[in-house]
Image (cartoon, rainbow, N blue to C red):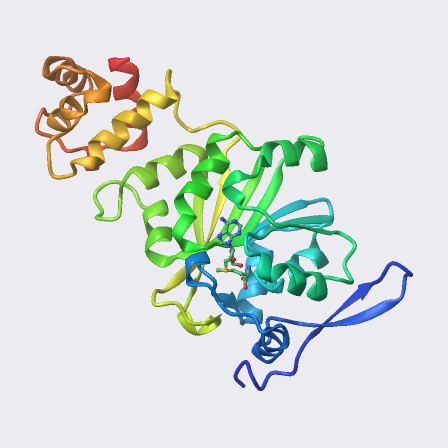
Length: 307
Ligand code: SAM
């Protein structure tokens, strides 16, 4: 049975008067089309709008995030509210941040029966999420769940980690290739600054691969759901995080160069060949080694030796 034929599962929700109401499940493509047509909504490519229309994938995302009635969930980019409905059922409270003002009247309709959802019409990159977690969750760790707009995946993830938002996990749909980059280690072509940055803060696990036909409209690329479980403490000890990430970026900016050349060419680091070579010698690594061969532990050690 395909999606269109599957009987529409409906959500039961309590309204403010305590009455049980039935809501259409937007994970069913028929309901998504209906609401889009009703509001004359036009998809905007610049906002990365590809809405989920597969109930199995939606169930999988919420299960992977381990959402419970204790949780405050931040959803980035709710679209028409498809995943928000699932989250509202599972969580104590949901804050959904949507940039496109044309989606707000739709969200007000599709989520009208939930009293545990707050919709913010904002650009997520401008929201003070740490302040929000403090205000709404007393500073306790929150969960982030999103089918991300792919054009800003990296700034969103790095912003969440670097701003020290109290986080339990981030469960997100991203481009498949980006999910691979987050998960791999040295010796693979996908290994790079993003892999190291993510793995410094969190344990990455790909929980599902999702083909283009699970979205409306279909994206040109394959997607994957990845869960990033925040470490209470990073697995490596580093004296100066900022400097280590400068070293990492410089190593991968010039991927084909040796580490010694890559680091000495990076003006912001102000390092001599001798300094880098001496640190590598202490680590028993050859002077000809490239950055792509180093593990996170080795980058931390190198950074601690140099700075
Ligand atoms: N969550 C919905 C779903 O799964 O069907 C929609 C996902 S769609 C891939 C991405 C959503 O993020 C869109 O609704 C888009 O308008 C929104 N968005 C794009 N850039 C954003 C930003 N900077 N801040 C907040 N929302 C954004």
